[in-house]
Length: 94
Length: 169
Image 1 (cartoon, each protein chain N blue to C red):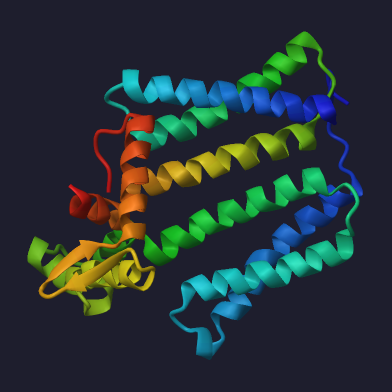
Image 2: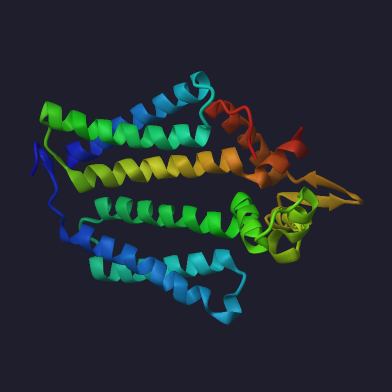
């Protein structure tokens, strides 16, 4: 289980770096689509990499931590990107 | 086991998945309690507490790590869906179009939003929420940020920079 959780954290780290770059470099695709699409791509790509290299992981341990971290990030991203209340507060700050 | 990936599902994972299936059922029941009508936040929190107590009661404290991540991950999915249904501005507009069943002008759409309460309701509702969270306060005929509100707005500004977002809200 230890390696499954470590791999989840590693792939989440990769996901974080990818979205930070993608949000700055890719124009013309909605940021929501980018972050959700990248989450799925990194997850599927991660599973493919594990199968290719032959690491031994438990599917549920790996998936649960990866999606737990990713969903937390997506919740924060959703609030930052779409919250009307936060936008109103920023307007009051400026 | 398929090419190194172990798909075996232990007892804690099974219990967690069962609890996750029960969560929306509990939420549906609680959402129909008349006294809690319109209190979407309390409905969700109460459902979460009831399901979590049952989940922990059956699970015990062993092997809680993976189950915790799985359970909270699934609850976050439900929370996203619940948040969209209860606070989704765009979905509210689509629902207004659907209920009207006829093409609407911008002013008609604004007037019919949320069952006739109008778009004004949206701003009033959000300002009321911010005021009850003590993020903003009224000073005469103007609205200002409280200290807490200023900190949150500053963190929001930093988050926009972190994610590299140009547009938001």
